[in-house]
Length: 242
Image (cartoon, rainbow, N blue to C red; front, top):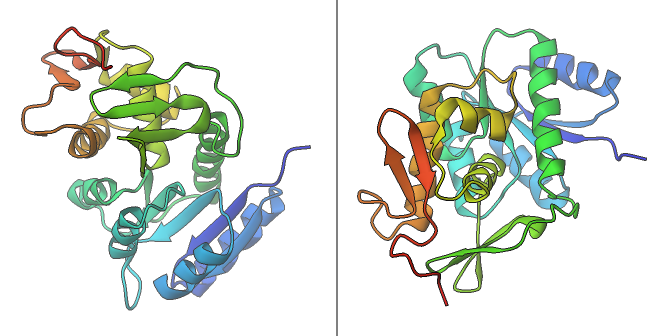
């Protein structure tokens, strides 16, 4: 029997928080709620969650700051950012801080439900709770990607990746040396029906390059193919890592 998804909602709007907690609960999910970043962080330290729904604008520490700090600490829980700001730059900033997805306010609860369900499916398909993926390890440079364990190692030490970052790296690694368009990468990492944008893929690629490239401004492993998208090159010198 599948374990109910565990969702943490962090939003200072009491009415919205109550609505979402009740609505997601009616869909069979286990939902906890926090009115600010401090309470959310305390709950994350005590319990395991499948998705964190995080509002950008909260009193005290805002959602962007909390998201960035959680990622810096190695927290990999998928984060869905809620924002009342309509400027695409603000949404891109959330992705750059480590969010996996964003949803502008106002929104219909069913849309939030659909996005949360997609994030939970992706998390579980990637083996985040022990489910095997069955692929062999992929080595490149000083890194090893262990798909079945959902881990990226650098010189044997774990590198923290968000769900979307891992999904993107995994998708490219499974298609090594094969150029992939942004639409195809969105389909592989988020699903055919997800309304992600080309820019969101570019942001995630930029984050991955910062993690795995010796010089992100001159990438060797994740290369741009102009007019197409990106290609993952595990051995740019033509020689596999020892």
